Amino acid sequence: MATHMEDYYRARAAEYDEFYEIPERQDDLARLKTWLVERARDRSILEVAAGTGHWTEAAAQVAKAITATDYNWETLAFAARRSLGPHVTLITADAYALPEFASTFDIGMAHLWWSHVGKQRRHEFLSHFVSRLQPGASILMIDQIFVEDLCRPISGVDEWGNLLALRKLKSGAFYEIIKNYPTSEELQNSFAPFSDNIEIMLLDHFWALSARVRQQTG
Image 1: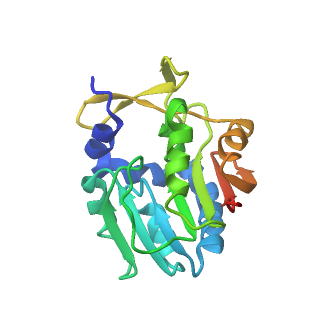
Image 2 (image 1 turned 90 degrees about the vertical axis):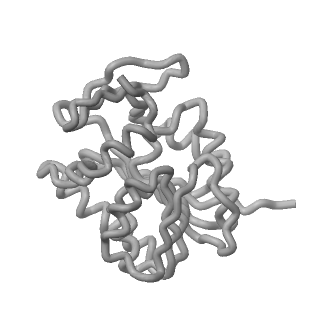
Image 3 (image 1 turned 120 degrees about the horizontal axis):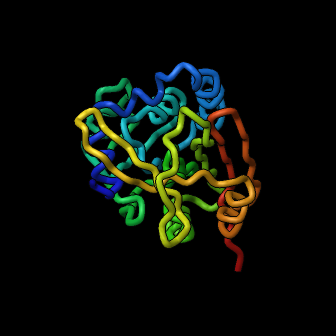
């Protein structure tokens, strides 16, 4: 059984978008698309963990420019098939080791990613992520709320307290990956060292967070 998340998403690329087709999620997804479009209009966006580009495509309708990154080119290859437009650039990059970019960004977004960030690496990731954004930039994140019978059951807990979920692909391969479901308080505590104006919206199946990167003084 494989346990590396990157390997799992590489293998799952062709079937990943089935996640967005589940009927029970449609009302939430429609609300989240509206939420994202309202905040992405005319903005320059850095996206990490873009995956197959579902949220990239939604934001691309109104954004000024998007640089969408993912660790796996296999998932970005599916994003490349979408109608993203010439103002969207897809590049492979590690979310924990992003390159220096020539352009600046006034939004950083990462959707369905936070649940996979180990608790022991949350501060590391956010510190690095905001270093690629303008002071005062917005952070936008969307992720899941645990829903019985729709979310895979928790299979274990690791040494840092991360929840683990066992996933099976159509190939028959099994993967055990980190899949955390943070509370609103946990989200506030994680983002407070780096940002202000933290707002969290809770839906039936998802949460959405917006925050503003703190202006440095002195």
